[in-house]
Length: 199
Image (cartoon, rainbow, N blue to C red; front, side):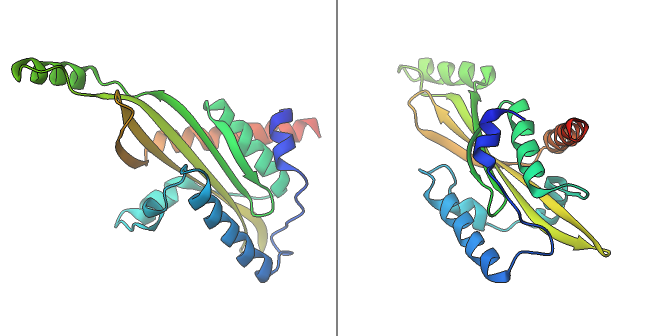
C-alpha cells in the first residue's frame, strides 16, 4: 500500500453491523460540510439536482464488496484513483469518504479553429476557448447487509469543470461514461486482490 494513502486512511474499525445511527448521522453532516467547504472543489448545486436517468447512473457508479474490511477498501480505492491519474485530496476514514482530483487538457481543435475564424470575420482577436479541465472524484463507502451477508457498497461520482484561456469556467458537468467507471472498479478489484496476497 502506498505510504501516502496509508497515512491518509488511518485506522478505521467500522463494520457493517457495528456503527451507531447517531455516528452515521454525524458522519453524513461531515460529508456535506466537506463537499460544500472544500475550497470550492465540490459545488453543492450539482449534488442537489435530480435527473430521470439518475437510477441508471447510480447503478453504473456503484459496486458491492464483501469479505473485505473498510480500511482495505479505502486504501485500495485510493490506489485505484491514483492509477487513473488522480491525486487524493481528502480521506475521511470515519465516514468512508475519499476525494480526489486531476487536471488535463480540454482543448478541442475544432472549437479553436471555429473561434479563430469568428474573430477574424468580426475583425477582432480570437475569443477565449476551452483550454483546461479539472476532474473531481468523490467516493463513498457504505456498510450494507444483503441477504444475511455483511459487506460494503462503494459509489464513485465524477464531475468536471472546464476553464477557457481567460481562466474562466465555461461549464461544469457530471461524468457518466460507463467505461470510466468499469475501469475504476476493475482497478479496485485488482488492488484488493494484490493486497490480499500480501496478507
